Amino acid sequence: MGKLKKRSRSSRHRVNPLSNQSKDERLDASLRESKILPIIAKLKSVVPNDKSMALGTISVMCEDYKLRNMLLKEKLLQLVMEQCLNDENSEIIVESFGLLRNLVIEEGYDVAMYLWRQNIWVTIESNFEKAKVSFDAIQKDGQKFNKNESRLLFDYIENLISLIVGLGNASDDIFEQISNKVDPLINFIKEILTFGVDLESKSLKTSVSLFNSILDLIYDFSSQSIDFINGLNQTWNIDIELLERFLKDANLNKLPGVYIQGIKLQILEASESTTNKDDVVAEIINKIISEVQDINIENARNTLIEKVDNTQNVVVADDTKKRATAKAELQAIALAIELITAAIEIIAVTKMANDDIDPDTQNDALLDCLLNRVPEVLIHLLKYDEFRTTSLTALNNLSWLFATLRVALDDWALVAKNLWGVVTENLGSDIENKISSFGILWAIISVVHEQINIDDNFAKSVFTEFQNTLKDTTIDNDLKEEYLVRLVGFLGTLAQFQGNIERNAEISQFLFQVLNSLPNLPSKVAIEILDSIYEIYGDAEYDYDEPVFVQRNYLNSLQQLTPKIKHAVKLVDKNVDPELKAKGEDVFVNLSRFIDYKKKERS
Image (cartoon, rainbow, N blue to C red; front, side, top):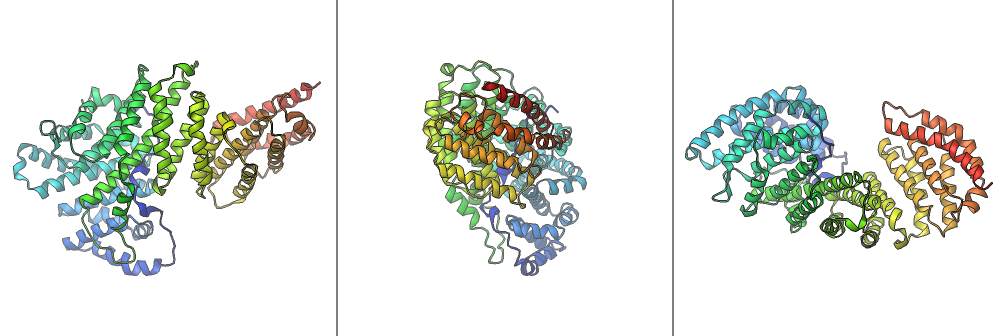
C-alpha cells in the first residue's frame, strides 16, 4: 500500500493515570505469591466461572505496570492463546481478545510480534467469520437476541477490531501484512455502519465503543496508507460526511467526533488539491478543540484511579459506563493533541511548498486558530502528566512553524513570551520533554528574541545541563544526542544576538571547549556545533566577531581541530544515518572554506 508519513499514535490509548507509577521492585516476591500465582492458577481452571473471573481480574491488574510485567513473566500470553481463545464459553473468548488488545496497546512491539508469530491473524479471521454469522442474524431479526447477547457480540467485534489496530500500530511490517488482507474486514465494517447508524432516530443500534473502534481503525489506516484513503470512497463507499452529520444529533461521547475530524484531516493531507486548504485545516482544528474543551480531566482521571487499589486485593468489576466514558474522554484529548500536531505538520509542508510566502496574504482564520485556541489548549494540558509529552511536541511544532514561515510575528511574540515562561519554569527531568522544551525555546529566540528577557544565568545553566547530560550513561544514546543537539542549537542562536559580546564570548568558549573533547563526543553533536560556529561568525560586521573570534584566535583552533572533525564525520555510518552522513560531509567541506574565508575577510 502507498504509505503516508507514520506518526506515533498508540499513546492516545494509554491514558491510564496509573501508567507512571513507581516501578519499585522490593515487593515483587510478595506480590507474586499473593496475587500473581493465584490468579494464574485460576486462569488455568476448567471451571468457566473461575476462568472468567481470572480474566476480569487480570485485565484490571494489567493496567498497572508492575503487575502487568509480572503477569507476562508467568507466560500470560501463552496461557491466553492456548487455553482461552478456543474456550467453549463465549464470554471467555470475548474477554480474552480484550485482554490481548490491552496488552498490545500497553507493551507494543514485543507483545505484537509474539502474537503475530503465533499466527494470531488466523485466529482473528476465524473469529470474525463467527461474529459475522451472529451479526447477520441480528440484522435479520434482532428481536431474537436479548440485550446481553447483543452487548456480548458488539464487545466481541470491538475487541477484534481494536486488536487489529494495536497490532498494526506496533509494527510497520505487521501493518503491511494486515493491509493486504483488510478488504473483507472493511466490507464487514461497512455492514456494521449501515446497520448501526440510524439516521431516522439519530441513535446508534450498536454500542458506542464498537462505533469508536471502527472509527479508530479507519483513522489509523488512513494515517498510514493513501490506498486505504482512496478505498474509503472508491471501493467501500464509507461516507465520512454522513457520519459527521449523524454525530451532530446523536448523543454520544466526545471521542467519535474527534475521530471524524482526524479522518477528514488524513483525507485532506492525501488530497492533491490546495483550494481552501487553510480554511479546511482551521475548521478541523477548531472542531477538534470544541469537542474536548469542556472535558473535566480531573473527574475522568479520578474515575480511572479509584478502580484500582494495589494495596488491597483487586476486586473484579465490569467496565462500567462511567469508567468507559472516562477512558473515552481522556482518549479524545490524547487524540486531539495528536491531530493538532499533525495539522501543524500539514500546514508547514503546504506552506514550505510555496516558495513565495507573503505575510500579508495569510489566512486570517487559520492564524487566529494557531495564535489563540491552539496554544491556549496545549499550554493548559501541560499540567497533566499523561498529556505533557505530546503537548510539548505539538507546541514545538507550532513554534517552529512560526519560526520557519515568519508570519504574524508581532502576534506570535505575545504567545511566545508566555510560552517561554511556562516552559522555562517547568523543564522537569524527563529527557523527551526536555528535547521538546529546548526545541520550543530555540524556535522562539530564533525569531522574537527581542521580546524575551533571557537571564545570563539561564544561559550558563544550559552549559551545566549539557555537561551533565553528556556524562550521564543511563540515558538512551539517541535521546541523549538529540537533546545535546537541541542545546547546541539553542546556544548557537543565542550567541548570534548583537549587543551582548560577553554572552557571545561565554557561549563560544563553551562550544570550542566541547569540540576539544573530541573524540569523546558524539559525531552528531560535533557536526551541530561546527554548523553553529559558521552561523555565529559568518560576518566580520557582527559586533562580537573581532573581540571574540579574532582576538581569541578561534581560527587557529579550527585549524587544529580539523583532523578530529574529519574523524568524527568518518565515524558516521551512511547506511545507518544517511542524512547525518551527508550533513557531516557538507559541514567538513565547509570547514576549509570557512577557514579560508575568515583568513581573507579582514585582509
